Figure 1 (cartoon, protein in one colour):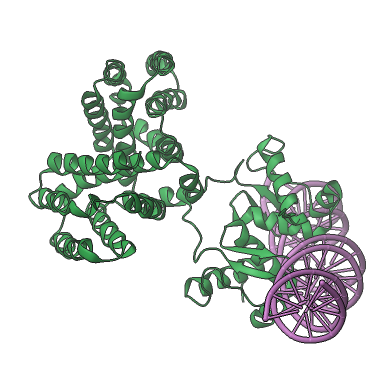
Figure 2 (tube, helix red, strand yellow):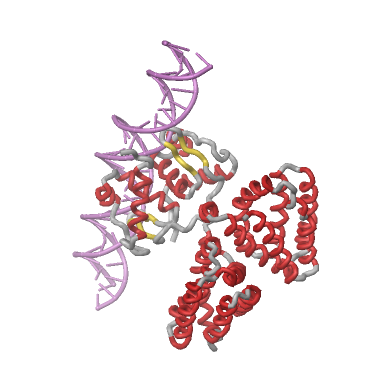
Length: 222
Length: 222
DNA sequence: CGTATCAACTCCTCAGACAAGCTGACAACC
DNA sequence: GGTTGTCAGCTTGTCTGAGGAGTTGATACG
């Protein structure tokens, strides 16, 4: 089944191509709507919709009375898309980088609230590991790992983790299907050990435990 | 009433708000253009531009003859924006996470081409450290660090690093202005040590050297 | 030289018309 | 009964013409 793209989308792609090819610098002004419409052989409203689409992607900006200006030479990478296309091992190694550093910082910065959060999410995870459906268990597992990263009190690391979550979730679904002996469900102790290392503020131990656990997860997939 | 934003943008914001509030599920079909136009009290072409903008942000998708459908409940986080708003220390800690893990993996996976890349970028950096203007020096420094991450042969880590680059570049400009004694320019040895650790495949050493260097950079700012 | 005015240009919004595509209902057929 | 064909009524897609509103730079004036 072929899907023909609307003219407006084609026009947006064409503009993006021209911008990327260096026809206009960043900050440069594009020709007027009527001129562009004539150049591409489409109506004015079509050009307007193409510009709107690129404005939504932060490539163009239109200012009434002044013109349409270039904000960036290409669409900023859509991270959801990058993660969807990437090898799952690459994604898990990225997660490993975020989470080991998160565990290390958490050991230095965790608050009493963070520790309480560990207790709750660990208990949830223990219950879910026994007999809950896969998706419940995955949510409980992710909630604990997120608690670790949150305890680092670093907005960038937290955002990074949240960006990775959907992709990791899907990978875990596949992983659990192949994991007949429920090895993953049985490593509750490894999770508790990470939380304990953070509690006693042993940064190196917390980091290496996190690394160990996540390396095991990565190796179980590839 | 002062309208700072065009109607089409306001309409897009309103739709985004409604979607985020749960008025429509993912995959649900929005009311027709004419209905929406009447609801928001604007013309049909205005609604079309609003929809087009949200389509550019991967929130909506319109199919001719069928309708407009919800792809996601909110705009995917724009990472450039997140990094611009974030504390610079948070950003540098994110970079530290990426780069220490990158150095560790590089020690295991570096190819002869990677080593050649280290030699070139290190030599550039040494020359630039002596007397080049700040922006030249910064480019040379970033080129070496990027070479390290590239040697990890992990697409996700490389993309992450590239996302961070613009924000880090700006921070370095400020840092160098305050760095009267050119301490940063004088740590060529630290960079060479990282490259050497990767060359001899000492993963732990490479990681800890990278951590040490980047911690120093972070501390010099805060 | 500094300022005010203004004309030409730009994007913004609306309305109307028709084309193109999808969907579900219904009739015809096997 | 189950399948297929047809079609009316919906949807989005595109174009055009008109007028509104904001910006910019040239020009005239004090």
